[in-house]
Length: 252
Image (tube, rainbow, N blue to C red):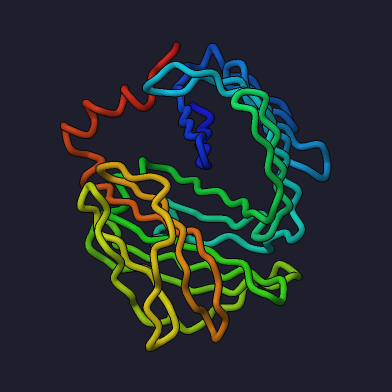
């Protein structure tokens, strides 16, 4: 298990994701400890205490993230017919506060909290997926989730999650093909017909995964969206598996 920390900003770029064995894990009803870091729920806020080391350069990452949901999702969604993979938008709109002592940065704004869980590895269930979310002016959150299952079946949903946490299934907007990443990873998103979404920044660019900021339009509203592309076929290749320990070192 690991705690993944990714910081992007002017003059700051840190990535930490150290895999740890069972001896470094502990949990009770409200707290999960992963090595020196921990995640705890205080009744209103998810508090993430970070004490990690970045890869590939071993730089310290110390700080705290506080995620306070302003909206609680009211349901979970099966991503495959058998229900082996489940996605749950726990806090589709949340107040997020970051305070770091190393690097010395702080930030506060609107964020998002969700969870994926399943009974088999992701690469056993999926060939790829595209996901994005954006906050709307009325307090709703737009979420697009689509891809291809391992058996070749397509899946997809467009949701508008209201301030009451209820998810309304919307008609899927038009498909927009985005520029490939530096690793030549395919990216596409959804936007209102006739509108071309634009990449504002590519935060994460790896052989099998990208995280991107988009300027797009959904249901008549101009929004900034967070977008990710995941290719599990690439993830499962020998070359990528050989490279993973450089970004995800292991400590038992």
